[in-house]
Length: 105
Image 1 (cartoon, rainbow, N blue to C red):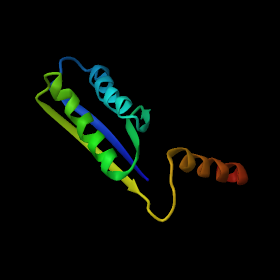
Image 2 (cartoon, rainbow, N blue to C red; image 1 turned 135 degrees about the horizontal axis):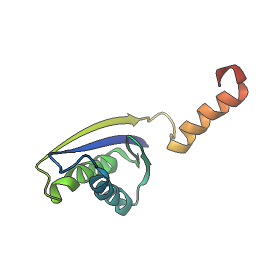
Image 3 (cartoon, rainbow, N blue to C red; image 1 turned 180 degrees about the horizontal axis):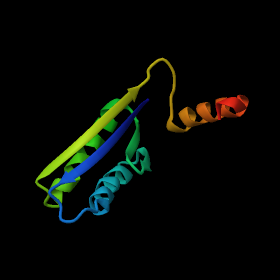
């Protein structure tokens, strides 16, 4: 299973707030049915590689549908194939290490 993080910047928008455009992109993620996690700096999608890439492309297109003329997106992909990997499992693994080694936290 792959995890893909996407940050989308709508250039040329009026004002400095981006939440309207972020919300449009998140609607795409929500409607896809994929597991996703919205963060303060981007959105993480989880699923098979082909599907997360397709959803990321559609998220990138969302600001264009709102009249934006330039969109800059940054994508990071973690595609692990030797064993099952999930967003929840990755976080849990780090938290377990922190709990077992108090000096680390």
